[in-house]
Amino acid sequence: MPDINYSPLWLSFKTAAIATVIVFIIGVFLARAIARNDFFGKSVVEAIFMLPLVLPPTVVGFGLLVIFGKNGPLGTMIENMFDTQIVFTWNAVLIAAVVVAFPLMYQSASAAFQQFDPNVEKAAYTMGASRWKVFWTVSFPIAWPGLLSGLVLTFARALGEFGATLMLAGYIPGVTNTIPLAIYFEVEAGNTDTATFWVAIIIIIGFSAILWLNWWSKRNLLRYKNNAR
Image 1 (cartoon, rainbow, N blue to C red):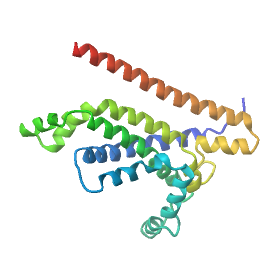
Image 2: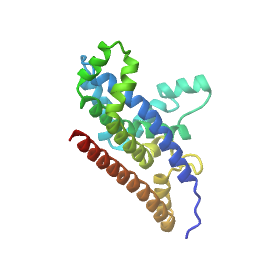
Image 3: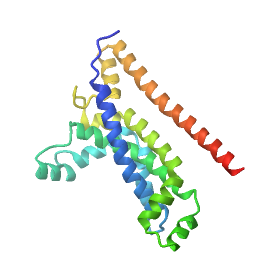
Image 4: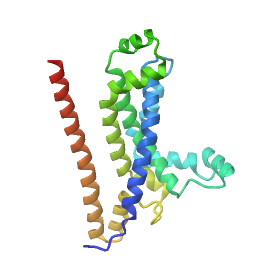
């Protein structure tokens, strides 16, 4: 058993958990708003949301570096306001995870909100319910299976993020060394035993998440069929 520093495990879990919460909130509300409204340029907006899913992570990381770098528009603004930099910090790890995981949550949430009849919501409106109440008591519960699927995929994607994180946050032990980065640099250093340990850990986590999601989906599908009889 190699001598293991477990900081990558903590950093990965902390990053994935917080990124999942942020992405879930933003993704659900954007998907809900866009799914129920048609406007000029809607396809362009959705294409921009999905872009990190198809771009190489290093390209996403380079774009984030341009935006949040020392001379970037947001990087400069944050430094002037808070006297701190984003690049090569844990905040950079979090931003990279949020950006690359967002398309999965948005896609799942958008599909979930489009799958049920909008007349269900309209019926609730005619009974005097507010938009907020309709969302929480009607739209959200109906769309929940799809939202949960997006939630699990978002966590798994944020946990495995590598390219954009390396570009924006670099590799700083104890600060930005998530599991994927630890694997890469352990291999580079010739520490294959440690790299194998982290590979096994991340495979177990990813496999468990997908296994649980499949089990949960099948259980709910079976319950739905039984209720429909």
